[in-house]
Length: 360
Image (tube, rainbow, N blue to C red; front, side):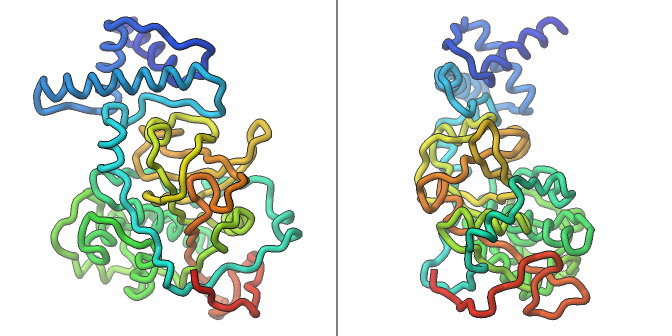
């Protein structure tokens, strides 16, 4: 048994490593990969017909992965948690968020000046600062917006108070959205403000379904609050860098492609459009091998990407950024106890008082 597991591990490694030739795999090797993948991802099917159907899809995805990984790329594909889905099934099941309304007025972040951008650190990872909770999984609920928003609320609460609290996505699904459907990130922030805060994940746990009612008692348990939210200047990666240097930011991306579906590791440089269909959190940025990247926190569990994260190419020619990540960047505002509203957070650059609300 030990030797069999070692063999499967070696086969799995060849699907995530960038090599110089497309592997030639026997049917037996592929079947072993499949069985190992089922165990690793705790997958099971209702009957043998469904299992065989998924095996055929798995084989096609494996061919796609092997062909890509044989090339010279900055990222590799992998037999991740979506390896038994067609790209159409993946899109239908996991990509659904609402593009913010262009008519809505929002206050932009501070204007961007070159010297201010240059003053930002070359890299930052808010995981290293103790501001990010472990990766979670939205499951079969269209609730990526809730996970993206609460990642940023949890982070700013930790930055201001020192306490990292895991907050309730289920409360947003039940009490704000009243269903497992697409929603607006800005409205989720507004709900937290209007409600006076939000409960913890421990008290109001996530179950990936709409329970059909809002638990009013738990809704009134307001553990963490925010004082407002703002949008970093749209379609400007420098503005996004400034915002992320201060705190994690919620953003929308287009995850439509099969490369995004089967992403394994490395800096994602594949072309993708700007028709955003998924919400994520940008929790840092850096440079690797001379290429800039964003650190993106997803909500598909640790079986996707780099244990739930993606390095997404940064500083590209498109104003909206790779996959549209600079199109709709939001972040929450929280003041500490000694500040008055209208002032910046301690250690942050002051807001330009001459800035006006702008239509987006």
